[in-house]
Length: 113
Image 1 (cartoon, rainbow, N blue to C red):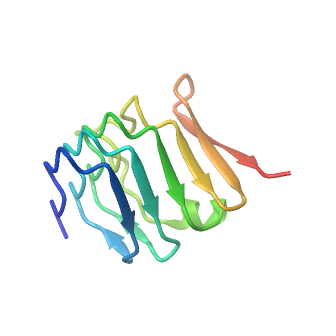
Image 2: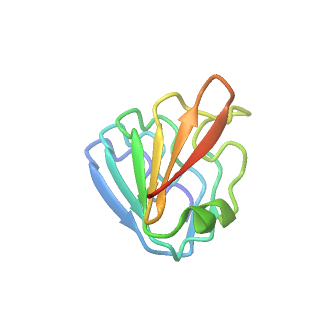
């Protein structure tokens, strides 16, 4: 639900296996550096990763296509109307990864092999 881990400053590792991650779920989890999201997840809430400065990568247990199919608000990883948070750089999937390009404000797909 909303705010489920919000403010858990000592939380370092989490694995989410539910179908939805609520708004502000990990807000201010400043030590969070290892987040794994199962392929079951279909929806992200707004601001779910705001102020998670230690989180530079997410491990996703599905494909790049499955990641792209997740319903995400523009501000799922940041606050306000901003679409990017300046620390999350990589989404690791089973068939490759997505890497953030801050100059063009896009996630680039890099397939394995």
